[in-house]
Length: 131
Image (tube, rainbow, N blue to C red; front, side, top):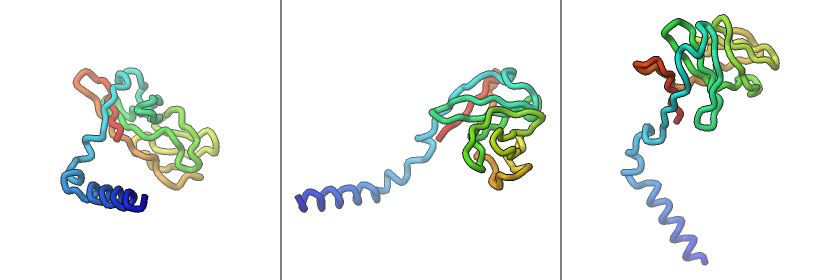
């Protein structure tokens, strides 16, 4: 039994240090999701989508601009539900975030929202990338 453990341990160590595995870019592990149309979100507003098992808040600070964040308050993890007037407000304790940058505007949160990659395609569809 000891020999089997030693063999497996040695084998796993060898695999972990194999150079080709380190060369695989992180892009291999990312996935793009089309979540909706730009017009689904009002200007200065936001909408929550479930993407790859994660809740993502997509905001529309300006007419042709989108931003995205994990839909969880950084204070205590409360689910965020949307945005209004380019602000995201946590319903539990009132922490407020900038809908363009995710920066904290009002405590009790002290850490900005976690950004998620988002873009518009040529047909104004919202594409969220989850890694």
